[in-house]
Length: 200
Image (tube, rainbow, N blue to C red):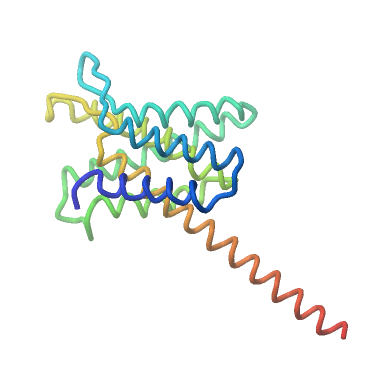
């Protein structure tokens, strides 16, 4: 699968869901703004002396940092979690670079599964599931690009490959959150029915 396919597919799907399925309000407005801005800026790269950085990745980073600033009382937790995500990403990329034969399946999907599992263990709230990987992947991709600079001769932070990882991990986590909420509602409904039947 070409890099960027998952990113555009999930971003357009997110825009459709936000526009037509979410009730009017701040959540809907923010979701539509973020998805459309992310899609629009995805082909724009900001150059610097050693390479370039994806404008969408920078936009997402700003959103993550704003969330971080609003929760400075838990700054140590967020910084630690972001660096754990970054370390996991860099380690997997280096492992795939130097010993690709030992990979059980495609590198992209392996990283998505590992990051999603790691975030479930690290995060405290549902919102953390989406903001921590933004900052963590930015740090991780920046470090990895500088590590392989001598091999690639240029630095590209936030390539469509990385955007695939970010959006796919977020969508996997969102799907799991929805499933958990549905399970809780079904369990609560079943419990209420049993309680009502006992009272009768």
